[in-house]
Image (cartoon, rainbow, N blue to C red; front, side):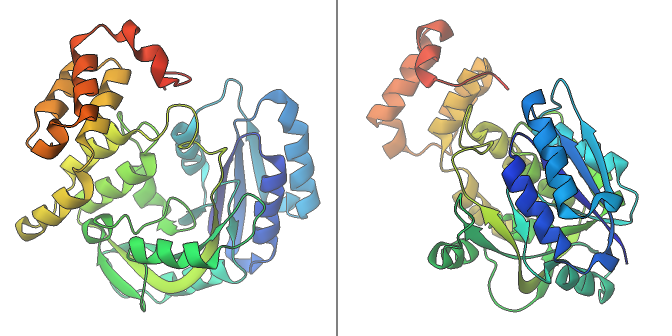
Length: 318
């Protein structure tokens, strides 16, 4: 088995160096190619090239630099379209594989007997900006996202109910990813939109019960800076997620509790009709509707966008 490792990167050469170093520690007989798609400004490109050279993996690397930048998920889609191996793994430039992590995923894939399973994932250590593991937060994260216990295979819709599938560090069939990777309204929640599309096609995923990667939590991330998480688009995809009738209440509990935030995000993007629908939704509880925060959102709904948009302090619409 050989795997395409896909690394989208943007202006983090030192962390890219760490990501590549973690790949160099894997069983390289499993690595068919390493694809790096670089959205960095020109001043970072030379340092990124140096990181590739320092890794000792040049013979496996294919590298592209984009000007103008593609954007987060178009960068992912570009890499997937270039992958040559039958299985692929995304590794974000600020994350890293644990020693033996790639082999653990490959072994699970090779041993798979259920043809419905197209994706394999494990747990992740949470690390800070300096790469130091936070064991308490890691354990809390695993519990919150339902990544506990031994290996198990379930329909992707079931994993979706707890956001169990991580945004990177999972192994997936390349053809499956390509078929379901792209959506017109993915915004910056493309990883969530992707797994919802998998779920709605009846695809299964297997949790392998091992820690396979490091996930870095830092301020300089896509969703913690600039426009923030596209909560309204996350909500839209949650609405599309097909679950059995007896699990609808669980879905509502997990995904429909932030309707005021959803309304503000729609307003921010100039979608006033969708914002009103969020405000009028039965998912907005009366205790929330009668709050001071709700009154502020209602005032935004009733006034022109320029009167309050400046206060949101978002860098841009996209």
